[in-house]
Structure formats: structure tokens, C-alpha cells
Image (cartoon, rainbow, N blue to C red; front, side):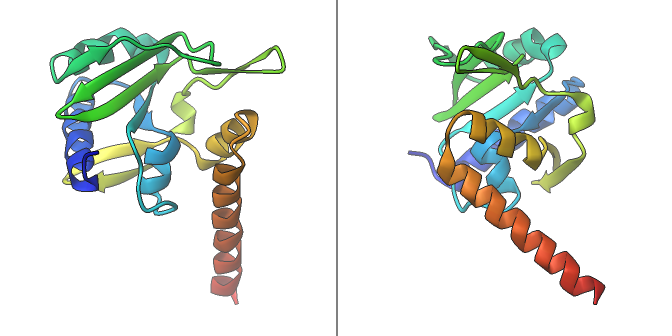
Length: 165
């Protein structure tokens, strides 16, 4: 298992390339939670890409590491790639869809959902909406992640109320 610093280094290298090549992307899942200081660690890099940039993103990442054979499991995601870059697992999703109770939910990255970013090692790292991931985790029955986000949002509301007093 790579350290957080090693994972962050890979993330910033990807960010540099994606930003240079005008890829529309954002971090999602536990990587996004980490970037928002909601969790203290994450296992792999979860990158969301708009469908029109999926193949370009794949090409960039193939130059940075190795593409693994992968399956999208209980998802109907149009483009799902798993890479190993400098020993770090990187999952890339474009046209992200979740199947629940025989219904397909379109969870694709939308440009309008990229409203925030963080600066990491002088690279702009866009973040997918927290509300999106609350919804996605509910669809995936990931109750622990749902609780983490709901608790974080509740604390944010309390903090905002206190600041207004």
C-alpha cells in the first residue's frame, strides 16, 4: 500500500497532464472526501471524466502507467479504466452509471458540477460535488460513507449558523 504522499504525488502529476490537455475531470469518491478533509486516508485515486474526454484521458494515463484488466461490477459505466501508476491504483470513470433495483442511474460527471477545486502541489485539482456523492453512496448502499458526509454537512451548517451570529 502506497503512502498518502505517494498517492498525492501521482494525483498532482495526473492533474498537471489533464489540466494541460484541457480534460474536463474531477476527483470523486474517497479521494474527493480526502481532499475536503472529511476522511484521513483513501485507498486509490477515483477520477471522474466527462465522456467526450474519456479516450483522451485513457491515452494520457497509458503513458504514465499500466492499464489493468477491469470489470465495472454492478455499474453500467460507459468507460471504466483501472491503471497502476507508480504503484498507485487509479480508477477512471466516464459515463458513470449505478444499477440499483434494476434501474440505471446516470451519475456522469457534468461540467456544471465542478464548482470547487483544491490546490495541491501547485496543481488545480477539481472536486465533484459532495451532494452528488451523498446520492451515489446512498444508491450503492454505502451507509458508512453516507453517515460521514451527512455528519460533515451538519457540522458545516452549524459552523455557518455560528458565523452569522
